[in-house]
Image (cartoon, rainbow, N blue to C red; front, side, top):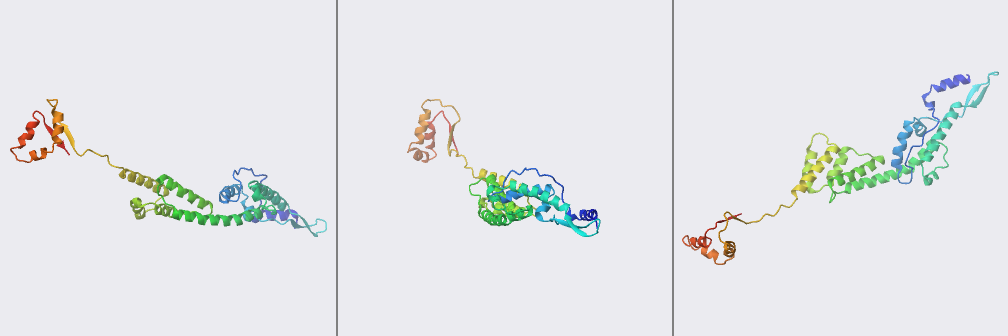
Length: 288
């Protein structure tokens, strides 16, 4: 077996294929610290996948052997020579490792300095920070179970739940739309019971956008119905004809406050003319 034939056979093996990348641009803006692993991973994961080198991190691109066997041309004896694929792999892995290190804060970097390959560093970061993420996920779920709308506006209430849901997704535990809707409805007061009935009685799926719109509409109707009615006068006195005597207004006022007026008014039909004669030339009406 010649060296050329060995290299040719290995190049057809997909497990030994090594992407040929000379460098990776440093474009990640958030560095990893003790509290932002989900956000950091959300940036770095598609970054390495997009450059075709995530196989170095998940182990699908294995480390090639450092040496390979070949036959000495003159004697035919088997000898070992450096493996050119390992040289290429080591070069690329060193670039990936340097890129990861550039994405770490100094405190985190000191914890992984002893590791020599990008996969070792990736796993060393994943183990402890994933545990932290799981603990945070439990905390977020507890917050979702206890959140209440209270005095919050419908918009602020919905966005506060959406923020917790996004954090949960970054922690590796995304929620379905039905679960999110359940949390939203559970935190509403009794005044939103009609909305809950509409949502739960629908046979088709309700999107989060629809829920948000219905929530705003319900809030608008509730606020409208809770507005106090304008106070209106119980008795309106309207003068239909202009008064002929300057003293008529004061006379009417006096009659309404005359304690004997009610007695005179109800004494009999014949005496009713006495009331009218006192306001001769004017006509008043009482509207309730």
